[in-house]
Amino acid sequence: MEYSLLTMCYLIASITFILGLKMLSNPASARKGNQIAAIGMAIAIFGTIFLYEDESIKLGNYLWIFGGIAIGTIIGALAAKKVKMTDMPQMVSLFNGMGGACAALISIVEFNHLVHAYNPTDYSFFSNINGTNLLIIMAGLIIGSVSFTGSMIAWAKLDGRLQDYSFKGQHIVNILLLFAAIGLSAFVLLARPEETVLYFYIILSLSAIYGILFVMPIGGADMPVVISLLNSFTGVAAACGGFLYDNKAMMTGGILVGAAGTLLTILMCKAMNRSLTNVLIGSFGGNAASGGGAGGAQGQYKEISLSDSAVLMTYSSKVVIVPGYGLAVAQAQHACHELEKLLTEKGVQVTYAIHPVAGRMPGHMNVLLAEADVSYEKLKEMEEINDEFPSVDAVLVLGANDVVNPAAKTDPTSPIYGMPILDVELAKHVIVNKRSMKPGYAGIENDLFFRPKTSMLFGDSKKVIQDLIAEIKNL
Amino acid sequence: MELIQQFITHNQQMIYIVILMIFVGIEIIGRVPSVLHTPLMSGANAIHGVVIIGAIIVMGKAGPTDYNALILGFLAVILGTLNVVGGFVVTDRMLEMFNKKK
Image (cartoon, rainbow over all chains, first blue to last red; front, side):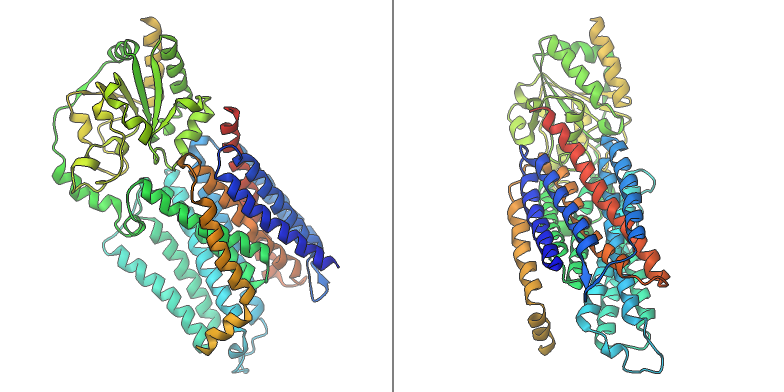
């Protein structure tokens, strides 16, 4: 009786996951979708705790279970509530890593259950282990641990705790590592050697190292793609758990995220006009150093003073602000909104041009500006705004670089060639705010800065915007 | 070959779920506007936190002296909860900001 009630719980959970994800892909219903999925998750979790039974034995260790859930809830909720909107990508990566680690731990414990009765005199012991279970456990182990270490590295890099790091032939080492982990698993499965336990932990280490080395060389600009990919990995790892426990809710949730995550990864790559293999293997930084160095026709750039910028913008009729990651790091979204309000009061028409991959994740910039109360109608997507640029008097580029680099259209040798960009160079004046002349995340020189219509305004985005506001008020 | 056939026969239901869910997953994401990519990724991230069910089962089945399973299971429950709770709360925070504008 109770078991069938649990089946109901899992069915409801599975439906809410599908429904929730569906609603998440529409702006009007997104929030409700997330809440519905959360309710389904709660039903599945509490259903498991109170109703699950295996051969009519109920679960025990309630104190441990609730203790763990309490600790996780407090830390998770606090971290999620406190995190700054700019640090969102790191946070998602961190939570994703937790899920991967969870899946890997489950595999380790279940493996120990499989082998705990091992007795060295029993030669056929390993051959008698159920092959399907062993396969699923090892798949969960590999995918879970790659997802865990990979996400941790992605988190550390986005958080500025780690620099890009790559060595010569790293891709070959990576591929060898991956093949070694998979090959060893196949060997264990088919041959069932005496040293199965030892091999199991070697596989664990190989996968963990692979996760680290796989994310290490990937540049900041490509990080969202990697996080999305790791996200779908964790989904598949969760599905492995579902296979193991014959649990339909884990299965549905896991595969759903695995499939949706993979598609989302591809969509993100498309927004940057690059293929997934290119992101993963064609290490961005490496190519850029050679391509950018050769094509980087260094010219003269001119600086513009704060007061000149203030005058230019105030007496324009149409101003477009192009926010980029620099704005996010400087936490300048609120100041930016203030500037926009002030200019609007002065009769200037202000809009924001949002590149699909501006910020560190697609849609990241929209979230940031929404946080600062910028009205939704003022945010224009790339396709919408690109036709308008010739009629724009002034463009203010705030900490964006690669997304306004004309080389993407003109220079076939450029690593970002083919990526759709915002055509800011068509506007009458372009003011570029950057901290210095250093190239952006992709490490490429930006020819836009040397164009006659472009003026540079150096400094931290937030400081510059605040000074601009003061200047405009004084006019 | 026999091994594969055996595997498929034994796990029919699961294999059907896998195949159908792959299509469902792709289908429902297909037309998402890029504005929602970040919340969607974060929401999907929370959903794969369903792996916590496995952690609870591991934990609940562990014998009183099976310290290995107890400790690792406990850790898994904490990490799984972090994934679920953190994921849903972060997603809600992001979407809250979108809704204010409506």
